[in-house]
Each structure stands twice: as C-alpha cells, then as structure tokens.
Length: 412
Ligand code: SF4
Image (tube, rainbow, N blue to C red):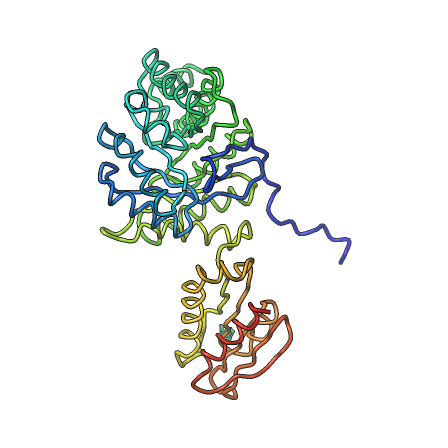
C-alpha cells in the first residue's frame, strides 16, 4: 500500500557541535555528524605504567577509539606522559582522556607534561568544590584546557550531583505553589548542572568546539529523560552512558536499553558501557558490547554480522550450533588480517540457519547464507549467495567448505 505512511527508521541525528579529540593519527571527532565514537576506561592504577599501557593497548586494539584513565594523585599525573610515550612507541595512538575529581585543577597546574599529554580532561561539576571555591577550581581546569588546546568533558553524575545546586532547587521546589516530586527535581538538577557548567566554561574562554557533555544516571528511565532534555536545550556534543550499569547481563541489558533508545532518537555522539567486570575479567568486553550495539542498530559497521536462528525442536543435533559458533569465531579472529587486505569487509552479512522453515528466506537476505538440515530433512545444506541458491554442501567437511565459499566471496 503506497498510500500508507512510511514506516520510519531512526530519527535524524541531533545536531551538535563537532569536537576534535587528539591530534594526528588516532584523532577522532565527537559530534557534528561524525560517526558515533566508541570509548572505554581503564581500571588499572595509572601510576602503574606497565599495567596501564597494557590495558589501554588492549582496549584500543579491541576497537576503543578513545580511552580514559584515572588521574587522581601526583604519581598518576607523573605517569601520564610516560604512558603516552610508551603507547606511541608501540603504535597505539588512541587519544587519552584524564579523569579528574576533586583536585584536577591542582594536578593539571602542577604537572604541565600531563596536561599536554592528554587529549581531553573529564571534570565532574559535582565535585570540584562549592561556590567561590568551585568557580576557582572549575575555572582553573577550563583555563588549562584552553591553554593547551584540549577538549573537556563536563560529566555530571547522579552519584555526585552538585550539592549546592540541588539544595537550592529543592528549596525552591518546596516553596513553589505546585511542588514536583523529588525525583523530577533531581532530573532537572542533573540537566542544569551539566548545562550551566558548560555555559560557564564557554564564558571562561573554552569554545563550544572543545566541550562534550554527559549527565549519567544509573536508572534507565531517568537517564533517557535527562539526556532528552540536555539535547533539547543545547547543541553540545553528547557522551552517552548509564553510570554504574552493573555486572554481567544486567549491566549489558540496562545500558543497551538506555543507550539504544537515545541513539534511536538521534541523541548521542560517543558511547561508553560502564560494565563491572568479574574480578580479573576481560575489560575489553565493554568495547565489544558497544561496537555490537552500534552495529546491530545500523549506525556503524565493525565486524561482519553472523545472523543465526535460535534453533528449536527441529535442530536436535549440535551441528547447527557448532557451525554458527565456528563461523562467528573464525570471522572475529580473521578480521585484523582481513581489514588490511579487504577494505569494507566489515559490511559483510552471513546467515547460518537451522532448517528450511526460515533458512532459505533468511539466507537470501544475507550476502552468503547456509541452511542446515533440520530433523527429518534430507541431510544437505543449500548455500545462497547474493540471494540465489549457488550450491549444496553435505558431509563432514561442511564447515571448512563453507569457510572456503565465504573467502571466495570476500576476494571477489
Ligand atoms: Fe527452528 Fe528452523 Fe526456525 Fe531455526 S529456522 S528456529 S531450526 S524452525
């Protein structure tokens, strides 16, 4: 029915001012219509140079385009330029962001080499002091950024909301004719904390082209509400993230729900998954999950997608699950080499399906698809290339044969 209203995709991207992070190789742009940037943060003691270099390199190699490190004391600030130098020496040019709380003004002033080595400073307006002290400390960090030509993320956080601002707003609300509930006041305080601080930074002399905003909350609905409002009221580049998302599937689901809704509405220029890893767990998971969210929503492509059906009573043998797993692993491990040899390979779509119910149909939508035999079907696996049945595989070498077909396709 061509008269029916068009079924809409994501909203157009919210217009923001582009912010360049870093210089030369490795530099990225956040906002201004640039691709949505994946970023992450280390959990090593920054003063431990070896551990921090290793983790930054692992995060960057996993696909993190910006990496944040904690700068919480003199020893950490002293380590920063050495970490930058070591990373450059091993060919890892990912921009580094310094995460400052409480004494950032002092650390940046006392350690000019640290101020120079970082590409961006993160300030939390909730913990740079109060009133005159706040203005002095916040102002010092902003001035340092202006002096060194660095970007700043003004990162308001629910857990350390600007006390003075919140108290003032709560009092005002209590005395108003129509008081709102306390949660609504807190949401408004988050929005105002981020926006007033950003405007103050502009007043002090930092151009909008160097400012990124975030307003992180740990509850999904609050986060969506707060970011919608930040976007509605400003055109600062936006960093999205659900703070304290949590562990395992809970953290991934909560952050994906919040970030996914906002991205769909066109809001967000860079994303970070604040996942709590298992003790000694793999920190790069947060990068992979961020990439998968962006790719699955169609905003960026990083690695060829393998679509697979969930399997059901028609897939009683494990051949189907094994093939889906092996193809996914093979593609993921081959990617670093493929990327060098076959530019654009990340856009490839592969389907591995369990039977003829949806197998041929789904396989035809992929670049290459295979439909394995379900219970009771003839033990053959038709392969579809560019929507047409190209051949039929059977027997013990099926997985290897299919890999050969994928490689042939990529080469062509
Ligand atoms: Fe089951 Fe076939 Fe559907 Fe896969 S495609 S879930 S095997 S019916």
